[in-house]
Length: 208
Length: 358
Image 1 (cartoon, chains in turn brown, orange):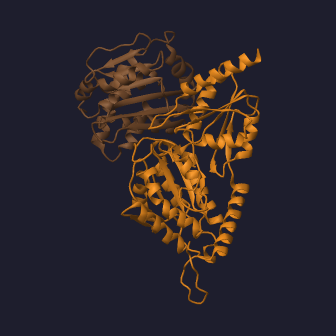
Image 2: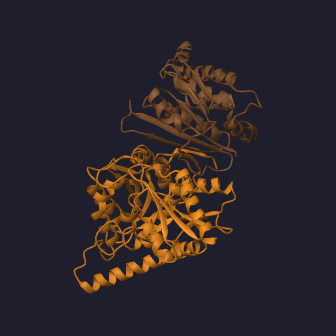
Image 3: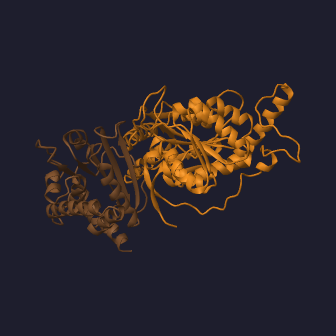
């Protein structure tokens, strides 16, 4: 199954829609079929904001996903709302700087990281969203680090300081995600889809 | 051609400009605001005219004026805004003016909600306003198809001198997908030389109006217009099917993005060897009735899926001509029937089919 999807969720202003857009653009640049479907309240800031990114080697059928294969959450309300909806075996990436209360699911790998603090440590306090995107990318390996970093550089080419901060934030998250990645053979359901077969396929396309 | 990642709303605006539409009048409303926003930025760059009107009523009269003098023009709005334009749309149809109207549907009725919906199927396909007329209605299910159908909308509008509506569930407008824009060679609106108000020096004066007080003349006018509708039915009716090549027990019917939810459900069920087909009208009016009936005839059960209370359901029933009971899944208010909803209901039908066979 050479297709996967991620739900990025937070409040308006957290940059989750942007994180999803960078991923979607990186996937387009690598020749994949992509959909980016946002859902948000009437408020520009402070309301709920989330986006579902679907990526496929062939075609994206439904862009609307009730049970995502991965979830990347910025805060507690988004975690409580969407955490239970993730597919069995799906990856859940949590920003514990905001979502402090312990939360887990027995049937899903949970990657918890203080993304807000990590962003501050690399001098990119506004780029918590990129730390989380990096962690997801490092763990799943769906797209290479370079594929996403090139996209960040392309999107922020006019603002060098922002670009560098975003790349630094992405990299610190990516390292953490890659370290937490389970060894081959220990693969859970999402891994077998996106990494072993799905990812092998995606990487093959990446190479072209 | 290069693939660009774009929101449906922006892609529609760019497609219209490439189709030679350099005039846009509109009034803001969620979830279509990226369309006027995009036009307001791009039209001055390409020598066009953008006006943010004071109301939707003004919009519908401005597009009447622009179309009447023979320029290519469009507007966009969302459900309540289209209601406000209704009177003007009837006048456009009555004056045989080619315009393109985009409706990015939101939840209804009333002011309702800003989330995606398919709540205006009935309104759009039954003319939207008073009098004997129809709109040609096209419904894209992807951002690429929104681009292609925007271009087609102008071609149909001008070829048959009718208002055309591009009907998108709000998701189409808000969603980003990679798109390719075809290279087009465009001239002025087709045949506008024959009827547009371009200044009558050296020729007979013309009249662009929907007022006909002579009953015989008005009757003839309407018959002539419906002959053009019949031509559209013959030549422009479009639909798509998925997984209908082989045999299937259950047929799904859906339009717009809902059809893609159904495709995912079909793929899911195919993993278990369960065969389900999909029929998707692309022209909602004219509705591809004959093709729909053929698809229904091959199924034991039919399930219609929409983001409303069952509006296309009426056309599916008409197409079936009583041969099948049509089951329905609908959600509204901004909710979307999910892949799981569809899979679950298909299983109910399959169990019933098995029980009947025993």
